[in-house]
Length: 144
Image 1 (cartoon, rainbow, N blue to C red):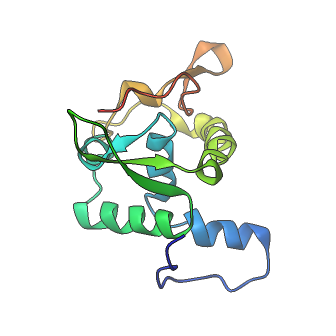
Image 2: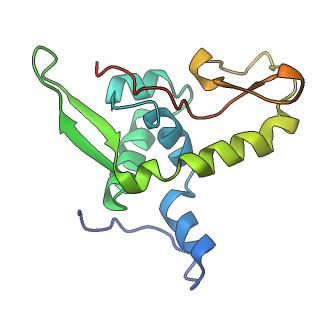
């Protein structure tokens, strides 16, 4: 595992605080949401996370790597590129992402004119058949 990057900490001996130390920074859980679909190249992550700067995305990926949640791996030819994937510890966040999606459903409402939308963010059905943004449990997306 990589050495942890300097970061802010709650400095509390509490499981919730420790979890937030690992994934509580802005964009971290949205990166996890994207990687729950399967390995992704940096450019694909950036495209599916509208509003994140390249600097923040790179920083969050390094932080998630240092926490042992994400790992880089080289794709086989012909792609010959680097992709990011969740480790088993990162995969365990599926339940957290699903629970947050279910909890946030009541606040979802109608899309605002400024809202970005990606069809893969809607993979489940909530009350009255409304789409629920949850992590896709289908087979991982093909490596690009």
